[in-house]
Image 1 (tube, rainbow, N blue to C red):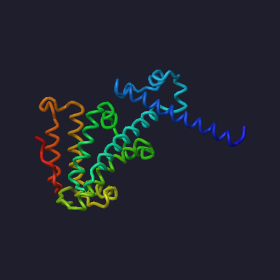
Image 2: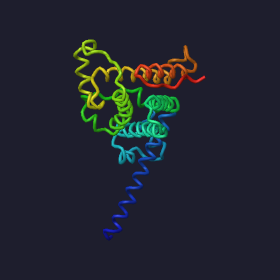
Image 3: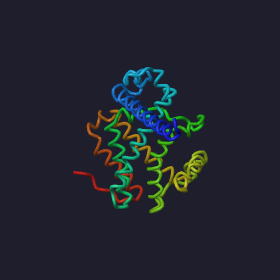
Length: 245
């Protein structure tokens, strides 16, 4: 066979392999939605696609590799959706951006509770774990986090907000926050602390709503989320939309 046609054949195999990888991850996602993270086994995915388990290993060498690839896809889906929302608003008002990103995150979580549980309801590898930064899932998670880091940094540099003093936060926390400063465009540690405080507040609220932990007092937590978001925006010095009637 000539080099020309051998190259075409290899390209065709690459396309078929890529298509099969997409099918495998789609099957894993269906199992996730129907049965939760525990349902995503290599044997279960193989049965879903009519493959033998050994055939699946040609595409994913382990269960962890398959889960990591699915996690990366889900993070990228969420991040792309939020970036699309952000780009749809021509105004550069940071209050509007905060509302778009926060509500977009909440909407995605409520629409995809099983996927949200996989991303945000399981332990994140420790920074000391070997090669954790090299995994596609970790890199995709960092791209998601960068959206909010960049927003907080933009707010800070446009209109610096007051933050606790180093003495109040203590040397241990200040040291950790200082190490993260480069990821927040050089913000001071106290400002990062406040941004992190508000992020965990929103994140925790979304988690509680998605996991059904607010029904005991709020059948519909949307108005509460909006009130919390407005309070955070005002604390950061932003012009925030009024509550919906």
